[in-house]
Image (cartoon, rainbow, N blue to C red; front, side, top):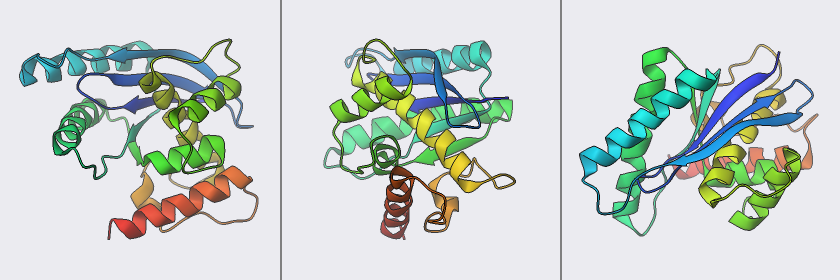
Length: 202
């Protein structure tokens, strides 16, 4: 039975949402993709409510096995970081109410997983997501493609870890990376990116 992952690229203005079914052989199929959010001038409480309602609807409609959420990381724009963190909190709380596990992944980990390069740009990520999911056109906006990339990356990480190991503890549980044997070049790069991100957070 395929693993259903809801990938979420959190943000107040645009919160990317992507549901992907991934089979044991790593074949991924898109179930749904979209963007939730509000205009920049909207009051914060209304913005968070809109995201909360959207997440609740997606969880009820698609019943994912796990959520893959982009990990908040340091940026020069503090207000952007705060908005991303607030949106992430709403998402994680919604999953917790349903007992759905949540995994957090850094952008570098996700880029490495789907493109083989942790420094890939959004266009490259979008192209690979389109290819992996066998889509006729690239998902737009980029937030939607990023959400699908998160879902794919998490499911592939789960496969790389092997049966019987926890798949939903996110980057912090990886302990510095994955075993190098049996991994694709992209997965090895992802393991390295994951270990680097973990060291940076110590």
